[in-house]
Image (cartoon, rainbow, N blue to C red; front, side, top):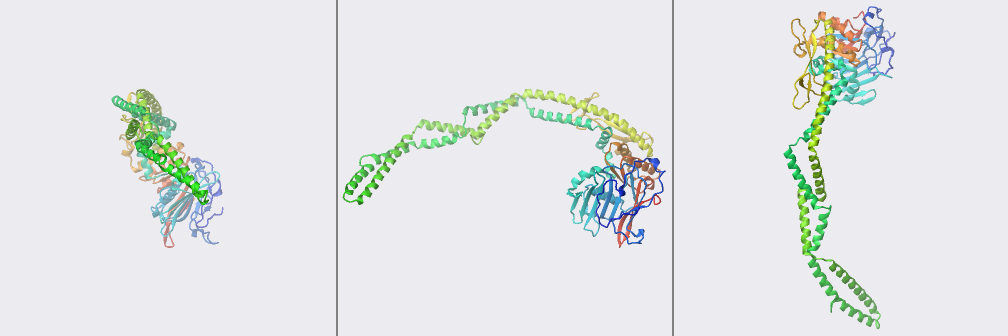
Length: 601
């Protein structure tokens, strides 16, 4: 089959599932290995570069991967990592790695860049970008990961600029790194020294036990019961008031309600009183002035009488001189205007009612309103609202005893529900712990440890003040949203030594094997398509390595597995073996990857 090469710098193409470069294979067992024919010579370009001129030797191409025609074992389904393309990342100039189902192994000399590929994959999964990884002289590093998906593969891309900016894409859509991690993070799980150290955390050990026992529904029931209990306790704390304090508060509130209710306030009443008082206080002066105006207009020898005399004379003269007709008309108009003014003055004067007793009553009423506003609100509306609130508080306090009794009854009922849910979860955990201990111990025996070296132990602790205390097996124990159990993995790697908590006894190599054994046992419950192991062989070697290789191969029957190792005993079990190497090209050091055929391995 001729090699398919991609132009330098080309992006990953979306290809339908089952394309020739990433073919569908049947699942196989260990016995299929011996029956494998000698591999063919299907050669695929892995490092992005130009097609060589006709007649140029294949060895002169930047890099070529030898690919077996045999069907690799392991799961070949949705979510699997198909390809990883990297450009300008540290020592990597350009390369493309096509991964197989089953067990994929990366080997190479120290410093060649094996872990760089894991770092590159981490970027595609949304890990924090580090500009120091950008290749010297390049503007940006770029990583693209191609995942199996229906109806077409999913492309997750990440670009890290040397200037510091990072961009992420899903297919053709620009997204945040967080969104990238949310979508593709569940497809790949990377295990390094940090991930292995999580196994030392007892909270994480409890999570593993619950995953193994399929306790999600029971955990949810316990969490819901504890949440309801805590909500009821919070409500009880609000009702926790001393009886004497409640009575004192009731006395104050009743006084306020009586005072405000007795005032019978109306919204806007104070403004009306102020206006009426202003008129009432000046009523006498207004009456005297109005009387003087009336006297000036209507009295003897006053304005209207003089005007009437002038009008009569003007009309007499007008009989002889028509020019006085206009003057007579004007005087007649003035007479009518004076009559109108006099009438208005009489009306206003009659409306003035100066009553000293009424003024005093209005002043006292306004003073009472002001007093209420100083204590209960800025205006009549606020004072009325305060009275209504006080009345509601009186009703609540008068019902306090009944509410407290009801909450106390709820507390007992809810605590019983917590205890029942926690007891069921605890019983299921103890059953699962026995099974998990046996299963992990069986795998560890294959990895070189003696029988009975691993055990999952459950314990409980006394309840604190602010958490529910449930009675189980005659003891009052603490219970939170995770239940009543403290889960401790105990390990005894050496004969004659007692088992101790894993965090206190395991060396790096021992921890690697325990982590691998746990992962293998939990493989069926783990939905992550691709598992990556970096430094899985830390602290081990010799005869121990081969069992680890077999365990990884077994794990790869349920997952796609990618392993970075320096041990040939592990690499020998690979379904696909890639060699990482450093080379010098154009006075620059570059990292290259080659997929080995059987002869190369």
